[in-house]
Length: 326
Image (cartoon, rainbow, N blue to C red):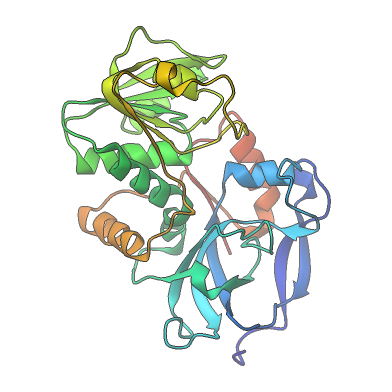
């Protein structure tokens, strides 16, 4: 390791399942290098609902104690691949069992597999870059799979999430002339969706979308298997549904007959942030810089306020993308 790397670091460790109070600030040794892995100085990380589920003990494969965090942006502090990942290189890391099978980004430093580190070139601030890995990349991949065209009505179910708000910004810049409808379980959040780029809103009550008929040509499904069948019932002939999120913690479908329940002559696709393509990631960063897409997070917290950040994410005020910096 380089001489500038400290021997200890701050880390937010979870020792048992529970509420935000189990996110404890500790001082731990900085991880030592091992073959095929490199050490990243974490500059910022986005928060995700899946991390809340893990903290609550709802991820069966995760064993505590664990440092959570499934994404980060930062710089290579020590490397085992100097050609691709030289010291000082800016990198993004997403998923790959980070924060689940091994310790993740809720720390000053994270030891990560080289194949899970993606070099980037960008002058965007760290808190803005931190919105890209899990949130904007997921929205971007989903958007490409939906094959958007001007004049379509596009519904986003789970629109107040970070991915939902990112999708609205990207869709506006890529396919002008769309009619974007954001679905939310809270009528009080309708104004936030309209201010965030949506043309209209729809209520999602008890897993039922409060719209008549099949008005949607495209749908981004972020709530997941819990509402996918109902979503398909509102998609017009030949439409496309992209199932991307699992916001309510339901992972599998029950009582779903594809022949009957998919839209007539329609299509079901999917995307998730673990489907990482280095070229696509670089293209997204270049695109948002050239187009000036506003990717600023809704709220920014410091690492020592991780419990507060989780409380905000779970609260009725939690909206858009939340980022935790150093």
